[in-house]
Image (cartoon, rainbow, N blue to C red):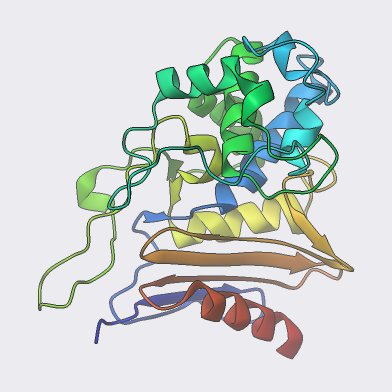
Length: 273
């Protein structure tokens, strides 16, 4: 039985860590990255760099007439499939680089599985969105995120490539062993490849959802009544982050264990509060 290191941060109590987790080590945050990519879209729109209704082909070499816009990508209504085709199994995104993404973009009209407007949760869609924002902004996704989201929000300790000595990965079955993380710093990065310390995730929740330093929560966040939230999961890491309209917030990060249990723990913390 593998250990399940956990880290819990809320507005109501001091941080809690167990099982060897840490507040100051970088962990994978999976699809919580999408909330930051959606925020980047909003910020670039505010700066006049893009329009949410821009067709994909304005910024990428996609066929004309697909009807897919940047906002469709951010809302998971582009009609693109959940995953890029041809992924491996052990480390699925390791070979999904920018050249592979460009090939898919050039045939985007044949890749879509639904018409634009139909909901289909899509990691591929967010990879395309990140590439489009990078093209529009004239810089890498990481550089734009730092300049338009992280620095204005006053948040550090978020990166695509943390130093190995600062990374925290899941413990393996044998004592002293660690599981290797998925490689997600290529084209899939805007969909789920960021690493952050748990304290940085909490700082993002406070800055973007509670204090709203960059305006109203962007389209990348999920909304359920008074709750804004997002979760994320890779093979061995899962996170829940959310805040309610009255300022309550919670962040739960776990290594190993089921992602559904991480979500339940986060929701339970908000309900108890």
